[in-house]
Image 1: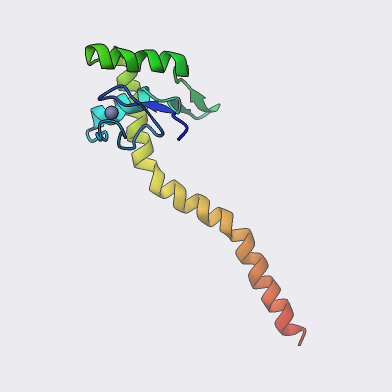
Image 2: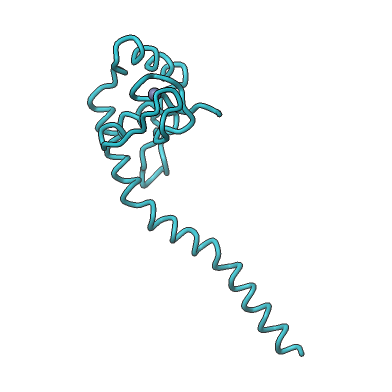
Length: 127
Ligand SMILES: [Zn+2]
């Protein structure tokens, strides 16, 4: 496992911010918990129309310090603004993902499908 996130509940390192935690078993369920989990991840990015995604995550060292803070005090000490920013991204991710995946899959498959169709048409007419 390559850790990329800190569990919002117990402060342990885990592989992905929205996965259940191997140490405490807790998975982020509510919007607020998912927002905290994203803010506690090195995958925390903000979508920007002009520049693509902007990486706004904290360094892994800083995130591990927050993990230690969760273990000691039960709170990561994230600012309300940061959790709100993460919540906005969670909304965007969850609103756009299925459509974007379908679209990018179609765009990715289209050239291969054209080649297959043209190829089989050519091989039929050649007979
Ligand atoms: Zn945990």
